[in-house]
Length: 396
Image (cartoon, rainbow, N blue to C red):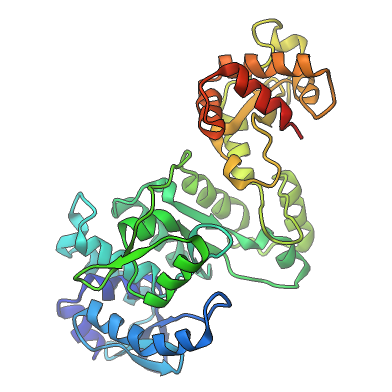
């Protein structure tokens, strides 16, 4: 197919999503590519047998047999670049085609928008087996990459809280040069498989094996999962994108500068690359929550327990009401609270008497409704005395 025909003729939302997600221009052709790798969680024979089935699925979703093998494990749509378009010009024409498509202006997440999202995410997205995301590498070599993310976030009726960006330039392996992996754009896996579904049965089997969730194929050959809607904390994608643009993107940072940013963000990373605390929710809490100590505000004036910073704000420390340890489910905004330095230190394991710690915890729960409601869910009790006991017992 020629590019001129592609732009002038009607294309399925799935194909538009695929090209919008990623395209490559070289040697007189424009192509979008899909590939996926085998996993240790399934037998290799299942992977090999899935490849021709996935090619059929790609063409079925595209309403035309325009996908073909690029290699034994990758697939492509190839357009002849008869208009001699460069990267910027093709992007503008593709964006115009998408924005003029009937599905784009819809106010609900209908089937056409779901098709576009599958084309955008699934052809390059991989199932994260350590945390629930469908992740895809992004290559920030032009402003167009960032514009794609912005358009998807703003116009496709997906909860902002479902999105996440993992700027790997700040990870220790990137800093050391051991593994300079690309930044990732991610979407909550549970939301995605419940509301958007997958076309690739191999990926569906990975999710079933890793997360223990069953799936069903509907009449449109989409695999949907029987899972609960995820509960989200406040959306952080805008803050993450803003931080990336202002601090990292295009800065050509030295190892020293990267290391300094990591320290400024209190960017902690375990050597086993498993659970990492989300420094962005701490940053959000520090900026937007009132400078009040939830532990002693009813007894002391904050000026008697703290000091003014250069930003003319009283210094407070961010505390996980239920000690987080290595449990990523507790590292959420609803579990954070601001404390003065004295109260925060008192809540370290063994730092003060058990009775005093319980008094502090009760005052925190009584003064901070979101902490109280979160504790009720975690410990499955409405009895505040039981909650106080449990929280005190789990102090780190």
